[in-house]
Every structure is written in C-alpha cells, then in structure tokens.
Image 1 (cartoon, helix red, strand yellow):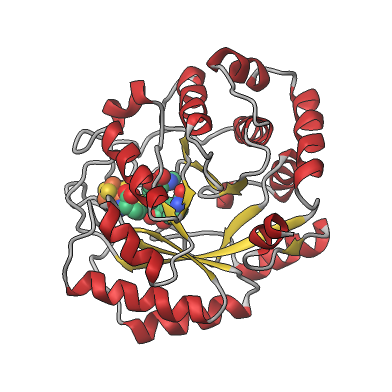
Image 2 (image 1 turned 120 degrees about the vertical axis):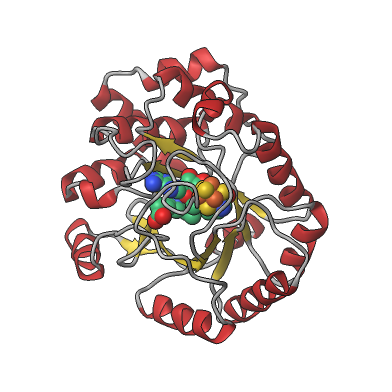
Length: 323
Ligand code: SAM
Ligand code: DTB
Ligand code: SF4
C-alpha cells in the first residue's frame, strides 16, 4: 500500500537532521532500487528560444534578453545523429525539449512524431517536453512510441504566480492528466533556488505525491540563474537543500526515479555523491542541458568510475514490474 502523505508529514521528513535523513532515504532507496545504478539521460533542444511564455527562470522566453539563439525545429536526421551519439555515452533515455507554450497540430508536430519513432527504434526510452498537450496529441505521441512526457509543476501552487503568469497551475495539471490518460509515463518535478520558501518546496512535493499514480520520474533542478531573466541574481542553491529535497522525494515516492537535473556544474563530486546516497538515480549527461552548460562528459565518466556507479539500462523498471 502506498502511503498518503500530508504536507506536515513531508515537512517533518524534510526537517530531519541531515545525516539521519540521508540514512533513512538510503534505506528506502536500497529497498526499491539498485544502489549505484544511475540512469544517464541525454537532453536535446529540438526547438530553441523565442518562447511566448514568461517563466521567470527560463533563458528561452522571448521577452527576456538572454544569449540564447533562436533555432527552428531541427531535422529528423540531425536528431537521429544526436541519439546515436547519446547511445555511445551510455545514455538509455533521451529527452526532446521544445520551447513551445503548447503543441499545435501542424507539420512540426508530425516531425516530432517521426523523431520519437526513430529514437524509440534505437532502443532508447524517449521522453518529450513540448509544453501543454491535449489527450489526442498525447495519444499520437504514445502511438509513435513515446515513453514519458515531461511537464514540471516547477513550484507550489501558491508560489506559481510569482514565477509564471502566462498559464496556470491547473493548466499544468491538465496536461499531466492528458499524458497519463494516453498511457504515457509521467516525468514531473521542479526547480529549487527561485526564492521559494521551504513550504513551497513541500507543497510541490505534496501535489506530486497526490497524483495517482505518482510520477514515474521526478526531476529536481537547481536554478541556473541566467543573465537577462528576472531570476538572474538568485544566489546559488546550497547543496544541502538539494540533498534534503532528493532525500525527501525518495522517502515520499519510493519507486519514482529521482533525477539530479539542472545545476550540477556548481556541485562538487562529493555533493553529487551525497545526492546519489540520498536516492537520486539519474542525471542528465552531455555538455549542454537544453541551452545551459553541464559538466563535461569525461568528468561525469570519471565520477561514475570513482563512485562505482553503473549506467541503468532502458526500460528496466518496466521489466522489473512485469516479473
Ligand atoms: N516549454 C516546455 C515547458 O515549459 O514545459 C518544455 C521545456 S522547459 C525548458 C522544461 C523545464 O526546464 C522547465 O519546466 C524547468 O523546470 C526547467 N528549466 C528551465 N530553465 C531552467 C533554469 N534556468 N534552471 C533550472 N531549470 C530550468
Ligand atoms: C527538467 O526538469 N530539467 C531539464 C529537462 N527537465 C527538460 C531541463 C533543464 C533546463 C535547464 C536550462 C537550460 O538548459 O535551458
Ligand atoms: Fe517557454 Fe518552457 Fe521556457 Fe516556459 S519553460 S519560457 S514554456 S520554454
């Protein structure tokens, strides 16, 4: 039986003395996951910049003057080449990101469906993050072989309006529902370091834990403050906050893949090791996230070797479930 967590219970977990918290989350992690197995996911921005939305953290919003260069939707062939290189790095999942408010039923969407088909045929778990989707669009993505849909809540419902005004929290939840109805697995998480309170972090985890079923995948991003965005001057996220957030997520959602996502460039190997101990079991590898820099591939390989991590194979959760 999966426990129904109250906000107060989640807060209590979050506030546990750090080493006790990590010990507890590691026990949960050991029960549901293979220690040291970390999925390598590759990110690709298939359509970059020029986005109509006002997400205060985002380098791709057209209204902020950032260094990001607008790029129209990539060609399927080019995307295929990127998928091949991702496989060479040990990636078992690939996430395609588009700077769209929502998916429109047009030739670009047909192209994305072709991308999904061909990457899926290479044996990778394919994830997409394309903004809002209807149930019909989600169905088309599922039929093309999409494995997961990423749509982050980003923060609590209460704080949402301070970060994004061009769409609502309910819009986010509807897209998640649409993707779920189409049979896709859900990847949904958020960002810390945007000036939110601990209550906001807990509020977001609480909403995610109330989704039935809970998201199979949950990215925790540390804000990458980007020049030109309203959040450009935010101070860096303390590693301890990242560890607490990951450990709390692991305890509250034991079977979910917790992704140590944006912001690793500012984290030491020791800091990341603590995140893996606390229950993180995936990273985005490759020198670029969508538009921002990420650790060099050889540095990540060195980290895998030093920490004795092994890359997780594609679809292995599904295999475990069906056994
Ligand atoms: N446009 C789509 C959407 O908003 O759903 C998909 C792409 S969007 C860039 C995907 C996610 O990246 C956001 O929800 C946010 O959580 C994360 N993100 C964007 N900019 C970030 C930043 N500067 N630091 C950390 N995470 C960021
Ligand atoms: C997620 O939660 N983080 C990834 C992925 N899902 C799409 C994106 C991080 C983006 C960081 C900023 C950038 O590179 O533009
Ligand atoms: Fe657009 Fe997505 Fe960036 Fe928001 S997070 S501005 S919707 S690309």
